[in-house]
Image (cartoon, rainbow, N blue to C red; front, side, top):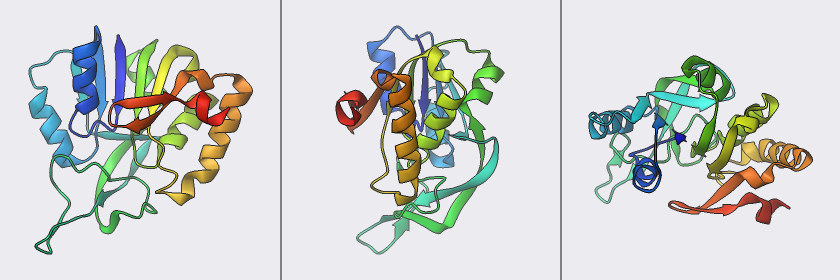
Length: 200
């Protein structure tokens, strides 16, 4: 199986896939340095795992990646540690700092697939803290859904109000094309429900 894990964090979804599926290759995208370094060490001997210190959205280039704040009882606020799971390309995500960010490389799914010469994907998992609908709308516009079997994703519209328009656009396109059955929405860690039950 060919799997792409976008927003890999510290690899929970990747570990599940490596255990449950006959993985040929799994490609991980994780732009936050602390998480990327953790993943690079964790999978350093696994030839089925390839890791990119890159964010994914609907454009190619560079952008600020805003770090999530983790307040501690001591009054300290942590940003840089393996497991920071809420950092985002979206400046309007409420739990991130506007002053603490990394400038990261950003790539479109279509660009990556061309670069790696990937012709089909069994599972695409997207957990990107507000950029999910930008990725999925771009994927639909470029007909990439035709080569993807299943798309698992987390919806952050409740946390990032600015993406509600993108969400509505995605639902409209997916319904019109009859492809909602390809999408599964995260309900809990490693648990997904068919999007067609929620949006039909």
